[in-house]
Length: 313
Image 1 (cartoon, rainbow, N blue to C red):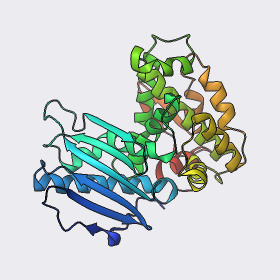
Image 2 (cartoon, one colour):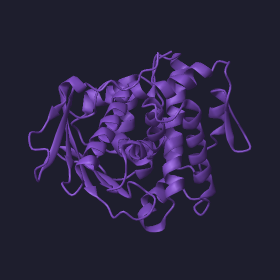
Image 3 (cartoon, rainbow, N blue to C red):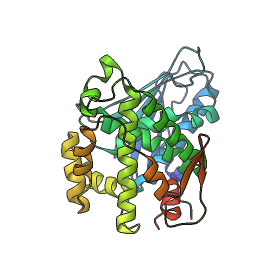
Image 4 (tube, helix red, strand yellow):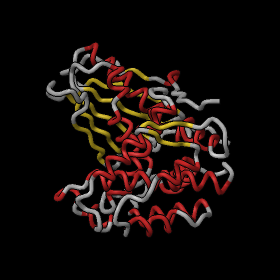
């Protein structure tokens, strides 16, 4: 059965001052609190669309390990200039005592348009690890790039076919970014803000998490998954501030595997995005003319479907 978001709307708490200067609405789920702060510069209709959008995003995030990563967190939404086609031209995560996801949203964007935008899923996925925010950008951006597609599928915004197509298209963008071929990923990642190489960095990281997810599921016959590994990390260390080397060591230790650290050591020195085709083939995915095709039978079909739905085998 498809494990889709079950946001506890019965725990919805509406601020009494919805139309006042501080426009705030709370969502409560499993005893965890999400504050939604929306600028009063948005119209009342836009504010309703924005709350609906955040409700969808936060519900999708719960499909990873059954609850939100933080007991108390917030999202802050401000208006962006209504120019261009991007409904969310800027967003960022700010870590602190209360983690905050900040969005700058076009005032004309509707709830369905926002739900189809990848940016919200990407930013929320950053919260899945207790990252200290320094070094190894490829790791945290890869996590968000992988899960932005998985979360869209689990929320019902796209189907499984579209999810794998988006992942394929992302790897193709990464492979097309050839300016830094021959240079180790760690080096390219450190210089990304100054030199570029975003696609190489982001999609190398996304390859890491796809590879880890598939290996966990295959080797354990569905007992383990990336979702479950991250749940263990959250249970242990949600309030910590860890470096990426700390995170990969913890993931191996908590899940009793030898995977995350060895895969990290392999990828950080890689000089191009590793081949994704063998992983796709093991999941019953082929590509013809740039279009992903999903086999309906074979040993990888259940694993592939489990990634998209969140279901265990």
